[in-house]
Length: 98
Image (cartoon, rainbow, N blue to C red; front, side, top):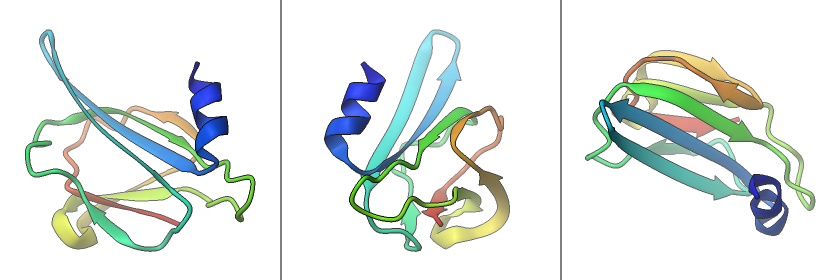
C-alpha cells in the first residue's frame, strides 16, 4: 500500500513517528521542492522513534536525503538521513530535504 501511495504522489515523502506507551504521534509531508526549512507542528514534542524517507520523484530530480534539526528554523543539532527508515530516538523541531 505504501508503494501505491508513493507512486500516486509522484513526490518525495517524509514521516516522523513518536511513541509514548500506547499513544503515537505522526507528522507526514511530501513535495517536489527541496532546500526549504520546514518547522514541525508545535504539538509534535515527543522524542522521534522512527523517520521514513522516500525520495522518488518521477518528474523531478530525486533528493539525496534530509536533515532533521533539534531546534526550529533548522538550527541546533543536525541528524542526517537517507532513503528508508532510520530510528534516531531524538527530539526534532524542523527538517530540510536536500
